[in-house]
Length: 253
Image 1 (tube, rainbow, N blue to C red):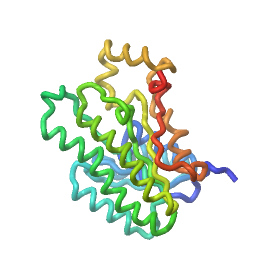
Image 2 (cartoon, rainbow, N blue to C red):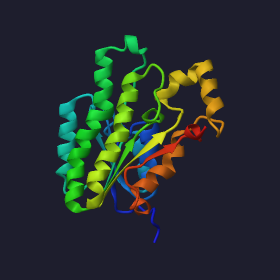
Image 3 (cartoon, helix red, strand yellow):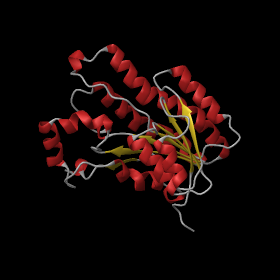
Image 4 (cartoon, rainbow, N blue to C red):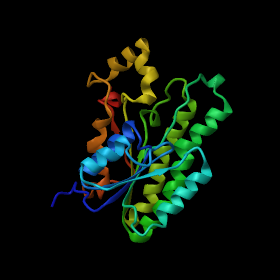
């Protein structure tokens, strides 16, 4: 048997409309999973991520939820937890970022980043995870960050949230591992997406980043495909509470 085969599994991927989330949904579908994509502005039909999933021969469903709205997140969790077909894989990838020096970082930006990147992740995982616990099986995967390990520059809210995700991954794994539910996280390195466009466009920062990456290049979203399939699959049944860097060697430098 292929331990990486996800045939028959149902995966929920938040932040699935583009970038890393879209690549994760595509990878899971190619491994055999059906996918529910969630994003605030995800098209009801005809989205790029839907085309990716259906091209792999899997079923796709689109849901909209604004992760900045706690009520919307609670409603999403209740809907997913109440479905007849249970969620096998929950990928918590939705996120946002606000860039400003700490002395100028406003409360609204702080609150929004913490809500989207941390509080919403916990609320959704609590709801879907309760069903996984009752079934005695399930995979939860968070999108962490290099800033789960480091401080970064001009992103204090994002850094605080991503440190929180690393801690939440470990805390949930401690409770849920004995009940057959794996909780882990992936820490992407510098990936060329919309979220990092400002860094890519800054010649000084971009050069400094490239000079530190042993692989010698920015990552692309598809570089995360192997990690997401691994952590979602039976191959990772004895992997609990880990934050797996996919960073071209950045943290090893």
